[in-house]
Length: 483
Length: 134
Figure 1 (spheres, rainbow over the protein chains, first blue to last red):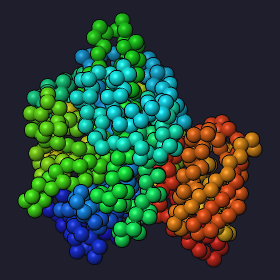
Figure 2 (cartoon, rainbow over the protein chains, first blue to last red):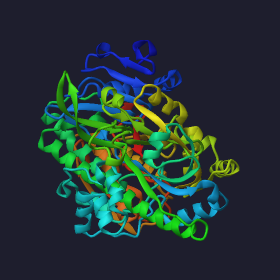
Figure 3 (spheres, rainbow over the protein chains, first blue to last red):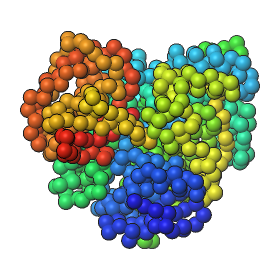
Figure 4 (cartoon, rainbow over the protein chains, first blue to last red):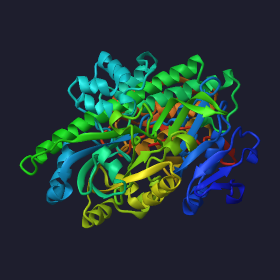
């Protein structure tokens, strides 16, 4: 068990477990947290899981966890693992089962006040018009050929079918398609699982949220992102659905043998892996890229649905009903990126599990219209408090491998939340505070209650104070649909 | 506990502790426990499937077994309530499962994981903890 006394404070809000804490650690492990978040992290096994990530072959500098850290399997949620592509490993468990679970933010030219009186109607229309919920399939049935196109082209496939515009692609991480995707390495059963799920939200912590920009902290950057106070915006949070889950399941199973073949010793079986530069490692990366592309296509189709629904329900209420994509980020993914290690530019495979890329100004991967200010970093909070738009920084490139947190992070188990909170009561309380929520199941709503999550304001303040990502705007929820 | 499984606490996902007098009962109870989380129980016997798997060890087989059932549940739209484990060796499983069309899903489970999974012997039989990603 790790104790606070085993950690040294590197700077404010940054704690480090030294390499010699455990004999199998190859590098130190760092945690971004304030005192309270650190105490929470020490209550479950998340810090032990962070330490485990520092044992992987090819790991460099230090592994990281963001302040929304909580226990996962393999790495903690909020975990960042940098490994050399030349001799390091790639691990499906360190990406997660929901490959490219991520979030996109759409902005409007509408003042939220204009539509608050009909928020009930808006939420009901979204609940009817956006396929969500356990086991709910969509209305797109992909043929084998379509499926392979989706897997290799991602959002671009969706745009070619009329779901959105080229502008959406330019404002999506990796332009909505991670290079290296090969449909042949995705199993038939993964494709079967995803065949009728494109354009669906799923359930659990996935949602569509209509919100209001409550406060702008940096006017110049908010202008660059097209955000202003009082503005109506929409968040969409979901991932790669059953296809991504099956890809992870398949490769966690298949790589059990790779670990023996390559003589890799692991402290946790969920960190199962293969050398990045091996047939097994290359196949997993190609399959992961496919699942990531499926998720981007999914969010692209969902954005189209949301645009249609809002265009319809707001007709006659507001004239300009256009929704423009601010950005779309992944928070469960592995990317090849280059960073200086021991003074030399080095290609790394950066695993982000419940962590968001946060590239700073000048980076070529940041859309041209944001390049001067940095990449939007989208942090959805829980449905009762707030979400944030941040911006990536040069400090993030130097300190955290271009990474920030991804959300609030859970503190309460689902079973405890169901025992403590009544879904219907929660729905009523939120309505009384001006937030309309519709969910597929009351117990599912209870599991996602604000009390089950950390304080997102605290989490964001840590990344802001450390300079890793800076606050641009705070958005409060007005209406939420959950599966 | 009388059902051979119980839900236990986990911060972000779902977890069950499963019991069995022997390995076959443990595997059957794990499947029962998982379906108890996923869907309304099925009393029907109109759907039957054969499951045949190989893995590197019992823990690997257990995860593969549950993930196979998740796949069938999702893709075939079936919920199973009877699990006859016909062959169970450290690296091989053959089973016959019976159930009916899924009437009402309660929770989408993405996968069974290896997290904290160790099949242990106790004086009263076998026990395992299984964490599901939801």
